[in-house]
Length: 229
Image 1: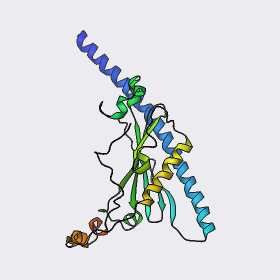
Image 2 (image 1 turned 45 degrees about the vertical axis):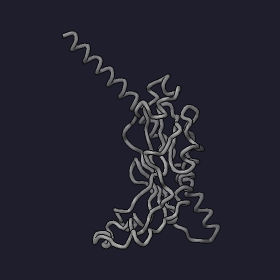
Image 3 (image 1 turned 180 degrees about the horizontal axis):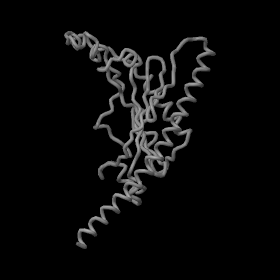
Image 4 (image 1 turned 135 degrees about the vertical axis):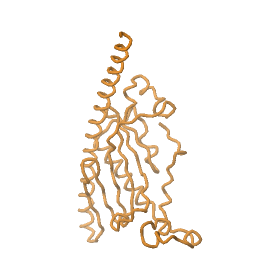
């Protein structure tokens, strides 16, 4: 029937257009992530030289974990950078969706995303699976290499002009440096005595000691945080 054929052609057209756009966004995001890896390596190399000149011993390390993840170890902190494999968009009420730059071309509303989480180095070293990690920043990249970043501290307002922000090595380095600073500026705060007055056997056996060790309370990102867009 003509109606069925027309419906199938419409569906095929939608699939073709969306798949094409998402593939472009994915490829752009892969390129950005590779650039980010190189900047991360460069920062660690430069820090190694500085630390050697100081004649002190501070553990720092760059490490790759497959195609979609790398980490930076700096003293007692580890920052894990992860590229999500899926392309995302947002509801119409999300601030980015309201911008003229996005509304004049709906294909600009699709984003690749890279997250940066902060973990204690000892959590990974001792395989403490119950210890928390903290989202420091999230980087969103569209098909035109324009980007938007949200996160903790300065990361939540410095990089929010999607129309003007175009990815460069310098921008990525600044985002990494700000992420490192945010992680290192938020110390581990011990819990109050009543909060650890009783623990479970599981906690005592070391499977989940987050409540005992405290939390990095400087990180307070939540769904209620206001995003400027």
